Image 1 (cartoon, rainbow, N blue to C red):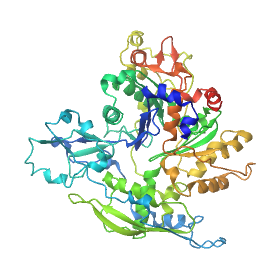
Image 2 (cartoon, rainbow, N blue to C red; image 1 turned 180 degrees about the vertical axis):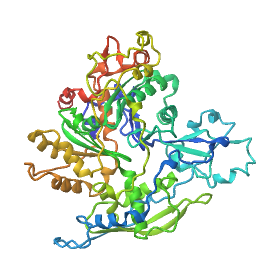
Image 3 (cartoon, one colour; image 1 turned 90 degrees about the vertical axis):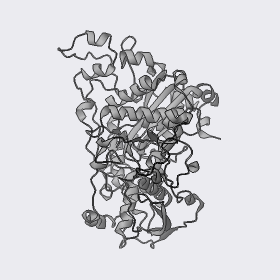
Image 4 (cartoon, helix red, strand yellow; image 1 turned 90 degrees about the horizontal axis):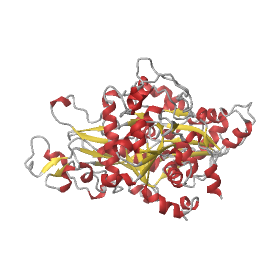
Length: 591
């Protein structure tokens, strides 16, 4: 039996889930689908827009490419040499009584066959006479297997004999955007990076908003088949990452209600949704995403903000570390692989990581197929020996092993917000600026103006530490303060996110968290709970469950109210975030 349908009566999914869209945005991927679906669409959260005119020089195929900080192998040789002597990666462990092991992965295993297929280039053209010519999203998202694009470069620049029949798609979303050849006139943009809106001097705020709207609108039309004319019959539940600031949450709400035209919406935090997704009430949720890792404790259905930890690394960093490790051991074929400038290379590395990386004692090697995607050439295949496959995922515990990309953070002044959406502050009388008239707040049409006119009151700090996963989990749980609660949480750790599927990760987390607990703490047992839902989708599934449980209807925001009044609705009542929603639905679920 489907677990998700056993935690909540199935008729609720059928009756209410048909008009509820659950949206779980991440830095690299977005999970979105109807609440009644068994699993969401998991789509790369990016868009490639066609570049036109001479003002695109110097030409960039990736919006953030010029912000990257490349770190050479030589700079990390010493640190890598020391890190390779960590437990069960050291070649000279004196006290280890177990013989060294050799783990080999058969390249012909069925689960790896799909990962090693050549990733095709995206066909960037559409027929001008097609009905879909005016709506680029609909024509740009066919199933990847059906795309036939033997040489999209042949129609470039000097050779365009069929301009009357073919024309470039204005923009392409999802995985197809990552599979565009660098020779094509497109620039890839990622509107969310490292757990925040990707706003910078090179990626203006309005452009970020427009890209999010375009990606989500494309998914709603092309994947969920919800046209604009029917959008007002649907409600949206947004499962937001813990890393989002108050202003970011509000902007996402405005995009959903004002631009995408949903009739109503509600926001829940990812950690709480993940707990619901596994039918729990108390857990330490460890979300290892593609670009960021977050840790937060949920107790009796209430997330504890002061336990939140944010680590600026994730699955993509592990994939790039895999490439770095192979080059360090000189096992990578002599091809130009660049995960930063060529997104298609990142797709390939992610597939190799998912197929072969594991945390396993001893030497872990495999024979795999590496693909090269050179400019203007068809993809090539290279059978090669992959070595030290347990090193890259160990970077989760030793982040200095990873080579993160360096981007300037968004201007923090942009996130200044008088009101914390994570706290019940609606009854507080906030002072208004003396130079702002009362008339501004009465008939305001743009809530953004109202938010900007309040003084900044920071009552929650987002923690970002350059520490390993085990230390972050330990620090988060110990911050709860109560020994009985600490013991319960150490035995209720929940790993979610795609990286949670890494073989051997659970036992590594248990072992390293146990050793990270200070000796003066009376705790001697740790346990990672087995996920009863796919770790990649558990937060989305929890959002689907939350969306159809008919409780806390006051938390839902209606489109007209949001556009007119912003965060304050009706008689001054404040939108309540899921941090402070109590655990009564748990009683309903478990009954």
